[in-house]
Image 1: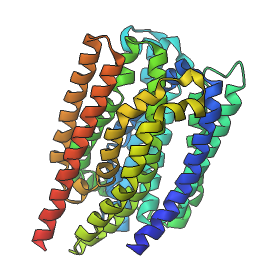
Image 2 (image 1 turned 30 degrees about the vertical axis):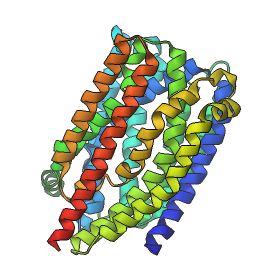
Image 3 (image 1 turned 135 degrees about the vertical axis):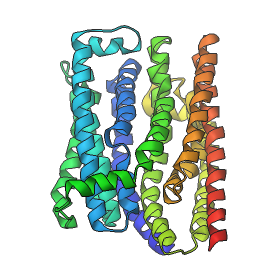
Length: 418
């Protein structure tokens, strides 16, 4: 456990720095950009989060779990090639939608073509980032992962602020700044990639063999994460056509400030726990102590913080971001129970990969999608955006609690086999 804490501290220190810069920038960005601007940015990023799942078919997740460096290299090349193919196809599709406008929820593409055309390069950069981060994670090069996070956040923040001050670039400032930041993070990975001494002699047959051997990832993990990402972004993909953009912008900021600390923590400890527990399972060692201690420490710290956050959310948001964001704190309160259970469940999500139980996990997210569609549908029927988000968050809390209990059952079952 001390090694886990040491490596976790290394990863989180980089992430904290990057996220701290991003959070401090929001004190400026919320004064440079309006809630309507945040709505447009959230719509832009919602499509990226959906398409990024398709771009690599989730093969990058297997890079950490495989035993040989040759197989890890084959999976890396497979993931990068798929990412390039999907990104090019997406560029062709977005270009067609810009030239031949359609109505409904895709109308914004032809109304804001400069922003829409940033989606394919952003998907490509996000895909390469994920592949490289898992590759460096396998090599336990946590310092480079943290450095890339810092470079990405710092560059993105500077770009967004500078473009927010520009009259001509203001509209595309947040999306373009995000793309520039992600590109900078990729450059750092590429610069240090040669130090990993990755095998370069993979044959086409080896790559095909790796694709077949790890077919559970595109068959179950990819659909699961696609459904999860789609349902997570439903408020923007669906409700943006029906409700006031100012309210959606308030919810967007609430979602960002609620999830940033959680994503910071989960990104670091999921990587560390995945490597540590995958190695222990391969060598038939017990993992229960690691899992239970992790959950105990996390919840002892998190629970009091979440209780305090619930009571001070609204005045704190207004104080930090300004009066035009009044009402954002109410959405934060709606989200906190879901975020609390997600803190533990998401950190242990890799257990389904270690035990090859992706099929069962997939059905949790099918149920979650159904619950969220019903939740938002009820809100639409009642013409209440607040009711829609309250039910949306409640469904997330219920499913994440169920996921956590199921993950613990996987650990108990494994321990009985030792």
